[in-house]
Amino acid sequence: MKLPHRRQFLHLAAGAAALPAISRVAWAQAYPTRPITLVVPFAAGGGADVVLRILGERMRTLLGQTIIIENVGGASGNIGTGRVFRAAPDGYTLGAGNWGTHVANGAIYALPYDVLSDFEPVALHQIFYYVLAAKKALPANNLKELIAWLKANPDRASLGTSGVGAQTHLAGILFQNLTGTRFQHVPYRGAGPAIQDVIAGQIDLVFGDPSVIPAVHAGSVKAIAVTAKSRLPAVPDIPTAEEGGLTGFSFANWVGIFAPKGTPKEIIDKLNGAVASTLADPTIRQKLVDLGVEIPSREQQTPEAFAALRKAEIEKWWPIIKAAGIKGE
Image (cartoon, rainbow, N blue to C red; front, side, top):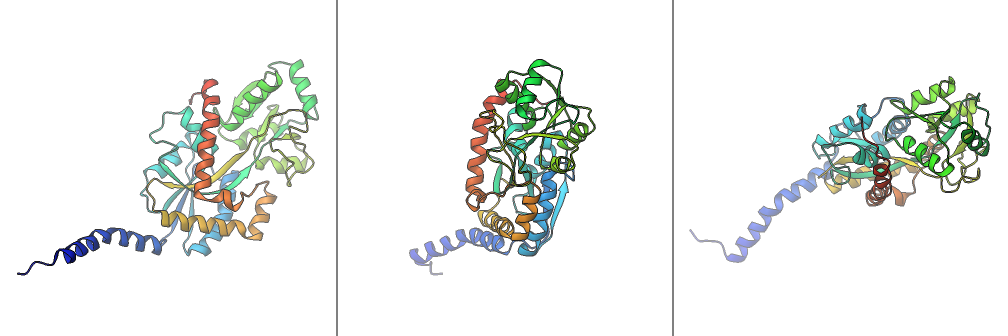
């Protein structure tokens, strides 16, 4: 039997080695061929859940497959995020993640995964700010009056938050540091129950996510300030903290989609394109604006920009969290 010429042999060997890569690319190009599960690590009805259901319906038409929203709450989002971490990196199990699940929790909890290296950013799809709201009976109508009342009544007021180590908890710590005030921290299992207790007058203050806006419009709470650098279109009458005289008190939360580590880039790019096209739809955009959500620019939506945002947030907040000595319960 005549052996193949060396050049032929090398050509055949190179072709054989390329087969797995070629098949992987072809598989990724055919994606998706079945429904996609999007794990939301929070209870149904919250801000992230509502927005993702709006996006998922539009993405279904673009991808040709159903987006199944699966709410897996508990442990400050760690249970649902852990489910995504353990999933196959094939694009059929994705996860919603926010500042809490993919920044703060890495400094607060002993996790079986690394929030920075064990997830592939797919797309940033919403940014939202908080409304500092007070119960109606509180004797303060603006930020200056609130700070004066808190100083005159140390440790008397209560701030409800969405849990120990949540961004709203850290916001309360930062607020006290900047204003020289003191009040009690009351952690809840989520933003919704805290907002309901402010409406009911059971607690005094809350940093409400966009789900507090209907209560603001209804006059069920006093809106003191927003944590944005400029006024929000959904509540244009509420001043910023800066306008209220509190310099340096602005911050945002964000929500995006993540995939398990090792998900092929072709799949991530296809998903990112579907999110970007959805966010460019005028009807979708108006729905999100009405919910008090800020839509990231197209440049901010890319996987690379989203990865850079998460890294920058970790570098900013981990030292603050650790200095405050916050640990998960």
